[in-house]
Image (cartoon, rainbow, N blue to C red; front, top):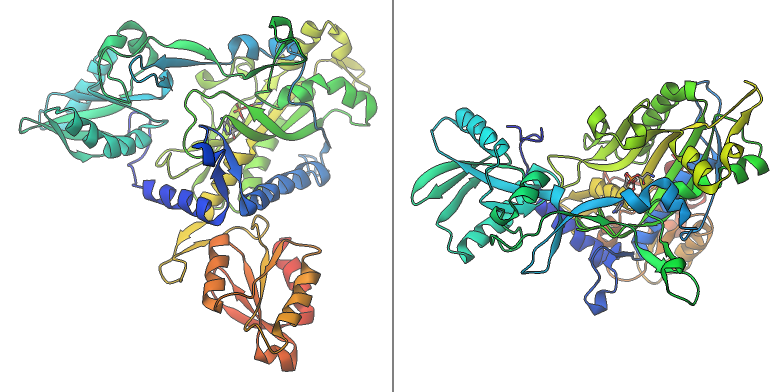
Length: 556
Ligand code: GAP
């Protein structure tokens, strides 16, 4: 069964997400920011394991993009340099980029509960007459919705699959608490069977749409309380955080925290071409924090107010756009696979023309690399966007800064001066980390921990653990020597406490790919057991070979 937004039938995956969030808290991957004060919505901290995981992701990106850039369409390594620029920039940057006037989300307020949500994330449950013929019902309902029918229940979600899950969790409670004479007897993402005074009726989950909210907000129930006549019309809300520089806080000292790292790259375009030997086609890459005052931060770290981006602006001659767009789209998709997102949960989706950003409409295309997160299933959520941004940004900065044609690039080979076009692969480090966590999570009732995190070895926060079987007979000393040698190169752990089963369980939850155990046999033949996390297979290897073994397995 498919949903109005084209998704397949839903799967109940909420519990997987709940378990993953609990594991992240329990094992120190991710904590709520300011937790001891009750937290702050949309901000997250990375604990001891999480910070290693996220660093591994960013370092893999930096290595594979900047230090050891991929081979381009001609088979030669692409030209790429790095940059690290400030979070606060001259605010004219944001006037030029269009963010000051256009970086808005349509926001709706619930006047009574004082809560806020994005108009485009409101899904409604529409109820139509029951004819016993699902197809006829669906068509009639869709026509009624198009004509402006109001929904009976609303929820906040990104896809109708997620809306069905939220409805399943919250819908029954809403109805019961408000004495609504409807009972949800069965819920799917598409059709919802309801009982009204004993009569079954069919319903449909669909986006409410800004038009209905604008024209008849009084008829749309609040997603928080299901009350009517409490919602405001949608208003445009700018997502940039404002701050002031210097001692005087007035309009003239106001500036913004950057909502993307990309503009720092464009603003430095001339500095980079003047000071390095890069020649078109070439790229500038940057990893850094970005801030967006999201109306409804949600789904763990997926939509946060402070997050990190890993962005490339790749500068090309306009005639090369199609070739380089296809190259980066495919190369970035393969990169996510190479760090362990190998399942069917990763997909590449080319945008339809009407989805494209204003600057990209005339270009070679835009595609998203998407992951099926448990909270988006059966739909997908964006991990990285690859867009042909044309020469929009450089032209804007040329105009707003007054530099004009001096921002053009002189192409010696073509003997031509022009504003280069840009292919932009823009990824989220936090969303990437979340996807890696989701992919790694495996329930395994056969293990003492009940769960194992199957991280790709390059991503694993702890690469190996070294255990003495018992805390005596010289075993801790041997283990310590091995540990001290390995830790010069990798993040490894030594653990002498508890029985060996419990130590393995801790490492399964941390996703450590290899555990080396020093036992009685080690004392006579200098071999150790290696336990492989995924297969649970054990083998013996010589202590002198451990470094080689790890180097081969980890730097895959
Ligand atoms: N320069 C282009 C740009 O910023 P974007 O699609 O708005 O494009 C790029 O953002 C990536 O940044 C997204 O694919 C996502 O991974 C990440 N991202 C965007 N907003 C985010 C948020 N609120 N929380 C976490 N990650 C976010």
